[in-house]
View: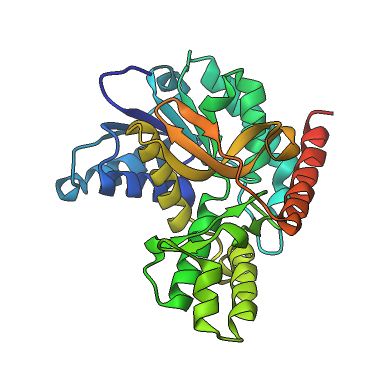
Length: 316
């Protein structure tokens, strides 16, 4: 850290990586963005294409292709590389294949002398963030996964759309595994400064509960629906990664539902999982342990159990 400019390295120039790069340039978040891919020509071509749009960007960003040696001077390395989720495949089905890929990538990055922050987006993100932490040897606060930031955004959008309220005024979260065992923390949700429970009481609409249950299912299964229709999800996760990047580089102390290492919070330890955390220039400043009702605690325990079993499989 401590460079005169904000330098970000992106590893993986597939659809997710390029959506992130495009979003970064359109928001003018970093002064330098270096693209790395196993297909070096593709990384070079993507850098050329992005640079050609620079006259329309809000701020200049130097974009170029590079190698793992460039990570040595980076503030942030964002990894979107790995095999994508296919139709009918769960994120957890990717564990073995992508864990092996990640171990190699992280070792190459660390060989450059990298001493910044990792931001992981590849699936299964909670497991691969844990792998990155173990293989890098970096402090836990400097290894972050995208976690349930995208799931939370999906929830906020769908609830706002249903209630006809600006999605930015919906304060609700999805936590747990970024996958099939995630859940919505309805007990803590609010609309503006009013609790969701009070809003529903005032509406007195008998259809609301069933609709919220349907919304959660659509959030949880959104990736499957999108993959079935267009083959992959990438725009929204690219924007989510940009949001996390901005919180880091701008030292925002923003609360985001990122994949963080638990050390006793929520009754669990030694696993990365999506929870609210304060994110700033140092990475994860602190994990926020919110109050969960008994049903939510049981769901969190189940989600953590699934992830722990997979971590044991990877490091058995």
